[in-house]
Length: 253
Image (cartoon, rainbow, N blue to C red; front, side):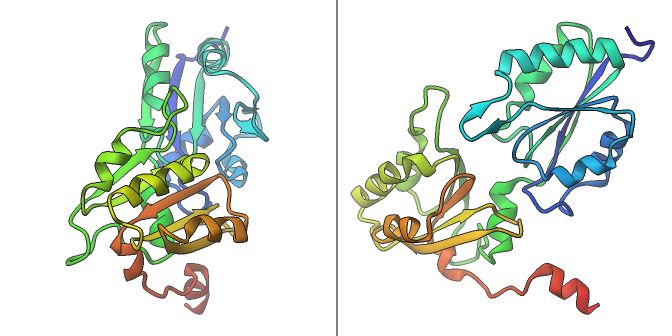
């Protein structure tokens, strides 16, 4: 048992680019005694950790979970009581389909202090890196962010509601349901609506497919797009602006 106060900080690691992390997140990583990290984080961020920190991978790779959620919950509690400060490092923002709130709710019943550091959400940053604005005057007045796969491993019913609107629709974890998504939008006579699929967004190995509801499945197959990927549907995809790489712009300076 540690003399330190047992506490949990749930930290958003951002969408993938190692620079898209907040200063507060880096401070939390530096102060951690234990870091439990997911598969979607950029592992270069672990270089900020103390040399004495224990690093434990708890994510999912090649369809296999290193730990089930209940095991992760228990691990947070046991490690906090053993060593002190546990950082739970999650991709994107932990409160947007990241189960961060669930973990905080669980550990509070064991008396742990709990903190949360928001992250740059992939739902906004990934489209932005491709020059796709989620809102733009004359093109979109709002946007939906929807999980593609619910707790019951089904497509969210909200996708059908969103398809009836003029809003931009961002779907996370939806690649396995792309056929269903295409069918839903087609039923709303939106076959020519623009759609983008962005794999490994903001990373060096980013891969992008852009088409319409009618053509996107063929484009995804041709480009071999797969998870982790984000789906963006709406007229804003046609508003895509040409962006130079952020790094090349920085290097010019």
